[in-house]
Length: 331
Length: 174
Image (cartoon, rainbow over all chains, first blue to last red; front, top):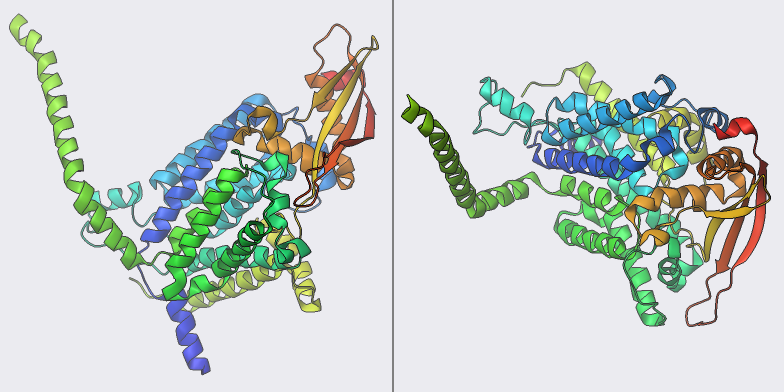
């Protein structure tokens, strides 16, 4: 391996143009998760972030000396302004999902998210951390290049052709992928230091924690089953950190990750962590496979969708004629 | 597609390398001098950019305790009331109470977060100021029960310990 081949590999990996469809899909999922998070939090906007919140601004300053992005520092501390902030956050999250003013909305969503995380970091969970890290890199990505209102407007203005998907340099997407891998490798590494993960009983203790329990699960006392569940968790997390980079192994590894997260989602309450982690998987899908899947979907569902669209148009025209008819008689 | 100019390409490469080093050193807990030096150097930026991360949930070992925090509120007329920091299991394991779980069980419960206790006590006092006589003190009590090893079906009784008492001032209730 020469320096020249290393540089070539680096350039191909980070800069070789490719369709930005996986990124756009990730932007949509990220926006939907942000909206879901905000709506779940809505009954408690003022409880956590209001002028009489659980943690006051003075305490926030006392416990955290770091410089952080935090709009609450400049917002007037009244219920009205805190509510206005959250409605703005929700609006830009909707813009991000539909791909309207994509760069602006991605940056705004990240800044608003950082603000609520900085205002009270003591109520955050793994899902918030995933969203925060991925949101940072998403700001630098051409996330609105396709599957977006921005693209539709560019086509209407004649700036882009509808038949041709624009190509983009994937360096920001690669950073999102690397961040996801680092997440899994890190959690694998942390766990591999613990005796219960090595002796195979960690799953038992994690599943017995009442505060995390979600849907009913029988207490498992069978050591063989416990070991299988504990060690398969380690294996899948290691694979998502390392083996996911091998082309032939990528999809089986992602499938393993999906099963792991859906299992945790069933057994434990860690809101949005599972969905945020799984959402990053779309950045690992090869664009050509995504195009194939899109073409297949269009082929399978497209005619039905077109038929539905035409029949709704006919119904709408019929209604318009019905309303117009009495006026004609009168005339 | 337009070619990147040399300056832009150098800037993007520098951005990539810097962030790769920062997130790997920050997230992977390698105990070496080099990693420590990198972490201390990049810490202000990593925190500002929201890239500070810890993926150690249930690691190195999951907690083997079931715990909860309760507040005992004493009123001016001598009566008492117990208010529980909400947990998902009190609400049918609802997603909506997960932040409350984090606040009560992961933050308020821990001695290291003692700076949060007065604010939390004031909030609890305001929340429970709905009687004729006002709250005069709020006491936080932590309850915990050890999870037995696999195969043990023995009962897991709860211990408790009062770890903070706050004398409520009239101004706290507004």
